[in-house]
Image 1 (cartoon, rainbow, N blue to C red):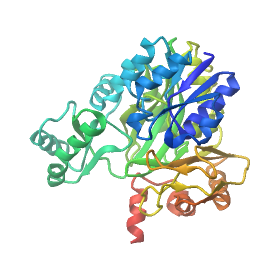
Image 2: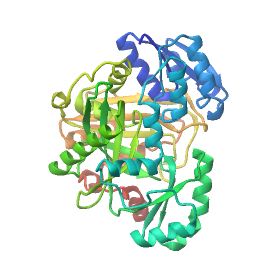
Image 3: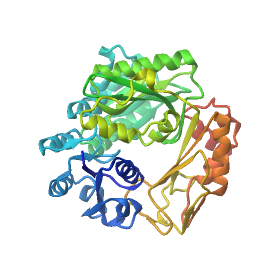
Image 4: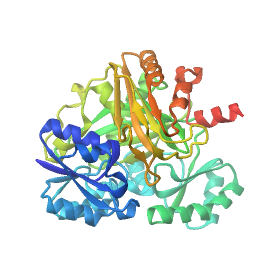
Length: 447
């Protein structure tokens, strides 16, 4: 694989470009009118305008992406995450064009992208799942009957959903009735299908996921876990590895279960098996993300591995560079998603960045998508950068993070950097004994 097109933007496009440069792989970037001055466009070996800012006219324009790929005679396409990364039809078109899709097989994407099919597949493989629907719910009456059987509260979810979209917590029958039709409508608008299902809501839960990798030679490994419980509106904000909550027995059991899940679908390339964990460390399958995750740098920090490099090697048919007993875990890593947003109301705050700088230090990594004088537009996710710190212990990583945010300058726009500085000093976070309700409870306590 000598030349690839990156069908994405921002920090992940730039991150892929840098690994490709180390491997001597030429890169082709695509960009919308809103992104033409961003760092990833400048860093790629070549870059081509893909369309107007709206995603349907740019980063979701599969035909135009493929046209550029063919014209530039690339060997493969890396989808990054979001956009077309979990679009099975796009992956098929890439393959039909004689190019390599740097990710899992289209059938795997399709199967795991349908949350109901994924649940059924995992159940058949012996992977524990949250009590809930085994098929789509067509009527409110069906939903109410099942909710009565499994008990409230329940989560109403879009079968094709992801990223926290199409998920509603229903505390009682009234809430379920109120949200049923609107959730179906939102599912149809966002994911092209109005199919919804419900799952038992796990109280005081943790969100823990396991990085897995597979190759075309039948090898499957895990690369340990990440705790992603600090969330707002079901979207991750802080991730760390390893989990400060899990004891070793549960941790090992989760690793084995994740690898079992990967083998059950013949998984190839990078993926993540996500679990919801209750107060007693019982864990249940949530979903399988068939792509590289936003939070992959914390895994890279504790393992010393380059996951994008592994993706490229596996995509060209090579065996996994290491087998399970050769993959080692060392130290602690925490990632902070730095957003252009109001840190209190969590609303996007687009605008021009007048200054973006930080003090370079050992153990600090910043995967950025913007720089000083860049403009954060309202068309895309407002993440400016991912700030990753790594230390020998969790305490050391927290200390490094505090020092980092004390030196960070992000001016011209609002950001959630002040929120991170506060969280890092709070006993609830420092203890490691937090749940997915942390930010919500914190906000309610401040009122």
